[in-house]
Length: 205
Image (cartoon, rainbow, N blue to C red; front, side):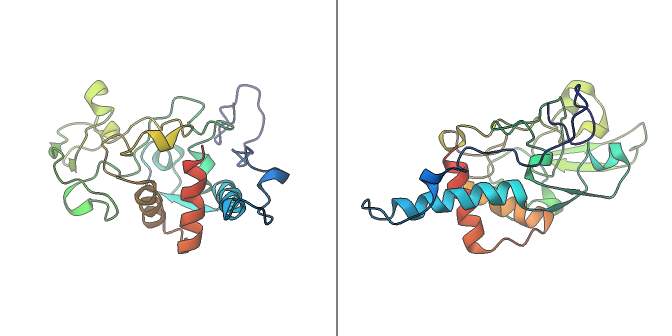
């Protein structure tokens, strides 16, 4: 319904403003008698704005950059979490953003201790000769295709706070770990305050 690469069946353009749950006067952050609640609400509002408005240079995402044959896609959080006020992908789009990577490519922000590690060698097709070290083969377990290694379905973001640990392999213990992963993975450059605002927003979903 809000696909960023032209798959919307109604032909409507992509809108990166995915969430509008907290854009309201009662989340203004004005002083109140509840001791800090207004400040926390203001943080949630800022987090929603960060989610909607932060520009991200999307690179090396299997299932996106390679399919579109572009090295960099100017996008947003909502490029992959595009369903309005829900946050999953509105069309079938398994992607590999590197969450399952292990070995030398292990994401610094994630903890894969205790997870199984698989070494997969491609023997045929366009990726023949390549080796992948991952904690999860992903969609390749279904298709048998090397191009699908590490590809998984993006989750619904509503109710996220109740579903720790995060990512399909549980490699992020907290939502701050999730935010740190994205910040490092795509070189976003969030400040510590922006990270906390985004975490507070995700916790409020």
